[in-house]
Image (cartoon, rainbow, N blue to C red):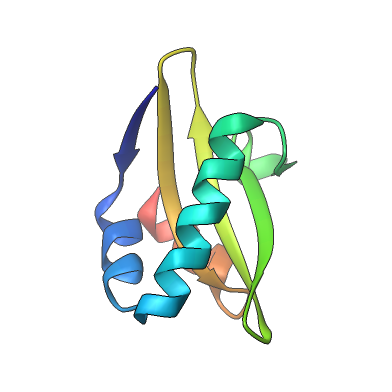
Length: 90
């Protein structure tokens, strides 16, 4: 399956430390193995799913969309201002 990163996701991913990147990559592999693992959002974010996972002592959120052939990684970050920034990125 093809994976596409938005510029907003790419910037957030690039700022992470090496040990955080490993955990984010594991979360992406988990999403690829089970596309419906994230919580489906409603309203302005209809069609977007958000997968929550722990990175060290902090909870991270990863927003994504998918179709039959492609996984779109939309946003990555902690809960604070996540949905506000996701709205800008979308």
